[in-house]
Image (cartoon, rainbow, N blue to C red; front, top):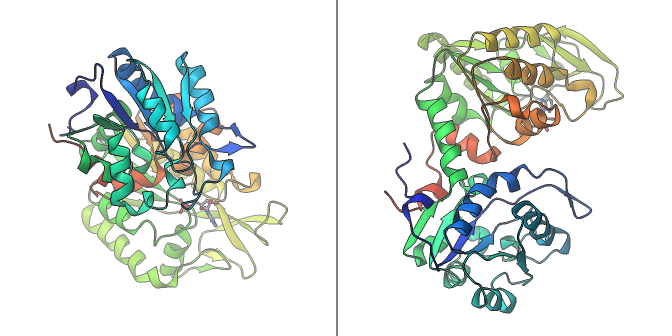
Length: 397
Ligand code: AMP
């Protein structure tokens, strides 16, 4: 249970409510190409409108590195949000975020009105959790709501610093839902509990492997990470991704899994290529038998079957990270097979944001999953068992 106050615990009638959302959506030529994060933010915004709050939305978008970059303006988000909400979302186009436009717009707000501030990362202090910008944001509002799960693993002005200067700081419905699903899956799973980890590097997933081995019944490791495990077991991996500094770690994790009675499933075959390209020549070879001049870019068909069979036995599945270089169609089959296995099972299925969420949505399996997290990095840190600063900063119940 989340021990933090939520939007259900406060009265916002007539109050100025600053809401930190995660509107960090992909944009191509000013067009939003995936609006899942906007849709996920609607329940909190609608609730605050219905309760008569003056709703001031803010978010970051991309990495403008502390400077106004027109291609990373939130203006297109204001337009799309207006359509989704069926009411105007006024855009306060200040390069300094809290500037004359924002102040005048807030001053003129009536109960139930909505405005959107410019990209918070136009300000260099944002990612440093600086005092000045935190105070400026706080000066706009009476109440603060954090609904940005995607940035909850960061301590920035707009999700952490600002809470020092407002009396009331609560979390929104999306934050509550993300933590409920991820928390339940990890801490109170219906068993068997299967976790699937993929992605490029072992080094970036050490803590998550450590933490999950204590909790799961089956741990599946695919993607680029698996080659370090194959090498550690005495195999040859050709030119595949390999982290020589983590061979000992890989062996230790195998021992830890064995000692705990956790089944650790690694690839038994791989699709290998003679170049890092969709036009490369490919072949399927047994894991740990990759010839020189070839690199593993996907799990092979036997592995896909092995992993899918493990998913079939599960009652709870958590998945984070692709099984191969799925961005290239030639190496997407393994990731697709895992996504399909999750779509078919009746188990609770939790997708930990990022690449796996994108893969599931692109394949049209989105509505077949129990929960798709809006935060890749945040869900990973949650799976590591870390406290998320964006959540910790909200008022306790
Ligand atoms: P991560 O950010 O660590 O979750 O890694 C995601 C990236 O890992 C994706 O862009 C994949 O293309 C990449 N990836 C997955 N498997 C492999 C592989 N076998 N070799 C190289 N890159 C991979």
